[in-house]
Length: 294
Image (cartoon, rainbow, N blue to C red; front, top):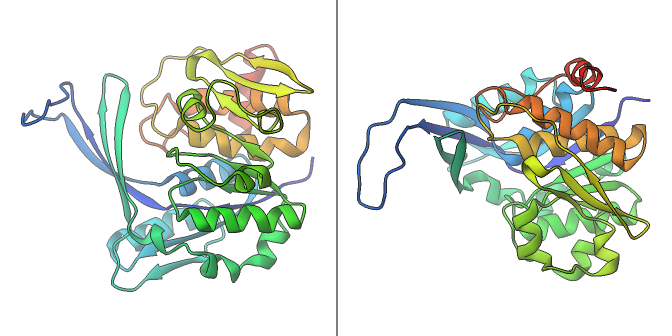
């Protein structure tokens, strides 16, 4: 299998993580256990996941002209990601995610900051790079008009796209149609498409269901791919790991095989702290799959 060229168009954030045993109710103050700042953002997370799994990855995004912006760009470069399409926005803060981590789960508030400046005009400067990609990955932490523009462009140029519709937001029907694959979790799928998605749309859906695995349709037949049972430390970034791994594996076999590979990567990712902290290498995923029976 050749090394895939993957372009990620999406968000770049600094995650500000508070770890606590007690989640405060409204108006209450509690003492936390720890606080950390770690690079994140759905776009950047998916780019890191794909790069660690061996893909050639380009990130298209924006950061602020603040200390976070420098750290975030350097972190992407350190992972081997091409960053010449990541530009700072003058007089703007970088995107941040405020994360409350408790009882092995998380609550997240995202403030877009410079991510709002990932506009269609900005992305248009990199159309040549988009057209040369094997897979383009998108999420919904950047302007929705940009998502629609990229999906339409890629559909016209026959470039495979993976749209992770998170956080869940409504898009025009034509935009959903332009996507090759759509990867909501169970709640996002229900919120966006209801109990019975349109038959044509249903063929694009790769629905993640946490511990219950992944469900998709192939030739109108429902396919269920089981998850791997592990003891999670931090579930932040598991979905991003899945999406990055799915994009990497798409060119090497069937959709079912790509989903199983992505499930394995996600299972490994939740065993360490931070969205990017536990993202595995290709060798680690392959070793894990061998231990699980091939």
